[in-house]
Image 1 (tube, protein in one colour):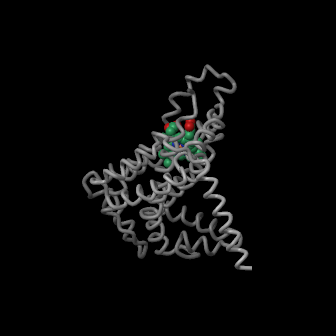
Image 2 (image 1 turned 180 degrees about the vertical axis):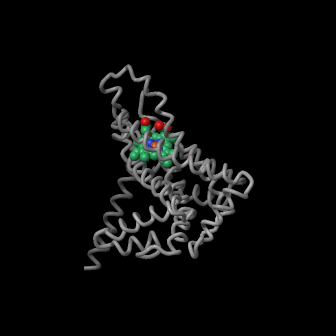
Image 3 (image 1 turned 90 degrees about the horizontal axis):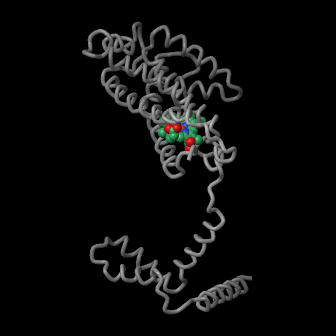
Length: 288
Ligand code: HEM
């Protein structure tokens, strides 16, 4: 069995190399030359680049990788030359200028996020994430920020209002994308990333709402933990992961602090970078 296997593979490899060599055109001024020239003048190149170019040119001299790559690229662009038509193009919508201002809502969401990161970092210096005792260290630290820290109440207010602003602008941005049909092919992935950004934005707001550990926070936490506990099958697990237990305790504050300050910023920043990168690559859907 194994002998036949090897003979067969050897035969296939032999025929492949034979076909590649037969198809090979001699004396062509293809990028191969440039690659070889680059390899020859590798004085300023690092080891990694030199090795890569050497391997690439070795393979390309024998198997014309560059040519086949160019052929498949041309074939691809022949088929996909046309981007799918947008809503405006398809229905020949001309009176769409009044949509223009709504195209800044994504940018406004981004701006709000930057303001939140900066003001949140300042608040984080003075906030104490402890929920034990009455009043709790968390509550006392908020009181300190509001009454004693110079400009503390302004920084907290900026953080507070920027949150409202971000939730509203992300939601309106989503509506704009929906009503201009910009979620369609080829932007489905960015729509899905957007949906998760909407979810994380709301969760960001909720986790921050609990941090002062005042009566408002306690009320909101009670609703949240009851909702988490009543999730079918995984209720206990969800409550543990989000609230640090199946009933409210001092751990709820530390857990929310951890989510609000460590997990969510990393996840949301990464998602926004991917979201904007995709917008940059695909361009804005319309109007063209
Ligand atoms: C943190 C939240 C978000 C930020 C910072 C953000 C940012 C942006 C920006 C700057 C653009 C460029 C066009 C514009 O500004 O309108 C954009 C486009 C887009 N966004 Fe968002 N976005 C967010 C949330 C969302 C949500 C919730 C959705 C949908 C569920 C979404 C889906 C899209 C799509 C599909 C596009 C492409 C639209 C087009 O090409 O016209 N984004 N986003």
